[in-house]
Length: 248
Image (cartoon, rainbow, N blue to C red):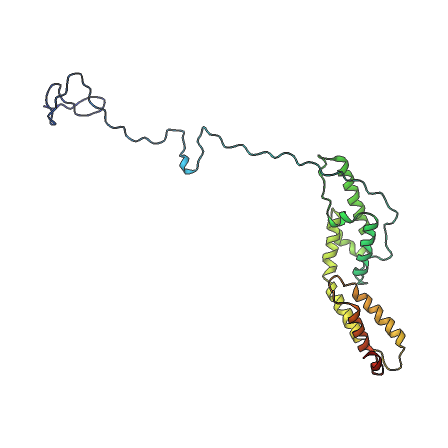
């Protein structure tokens, strides 16, 4: 005969010494078997590591702190030079960018400011080397002044807002190099349309053609085919027909 148990597990308990349905007799004092433990979820305060979360007792790894960047080589101060101007100034009305920029490159070399124009000496951190930082600032200002002293007032707008000589020079290059092809085409057309008539002064004509050609060769960096052989052909076709026996 079975009684509904009031035990802690809420299970049917067999009477002691009475055979059960399984034919076995529970011995007195034998505790009823415990039920299988139910699967338990993660304890409170824990996270599922399989979901890519960190265990609360495993703190996130500390960020790697890089050592401060070492200061570069010391930057010397450029010795002031009395040469700070060239003979011509940049003026868009004169279309003189090519000759002016070539002269400015000579000035940068003479004053030892090429690296500040090209930007190969970066802006230094005063916290690493205050002396070199001050020298860099003065050298940059000197290089920027060289540009400012050699351009027309109308061109100074291209330098506004430029804190470095590199940026000022780059701005001028962007404005004027885009016009190089137009100037080249115009001068090339001029030299091909120049003709010497019968009875004209051939010596003066040749000198004028040479002057026009020299202006074209300023584009030799971008136009490598502007050589003497081509000039001879251009000059020959500009002469009167009476000179054919000398040019063939």
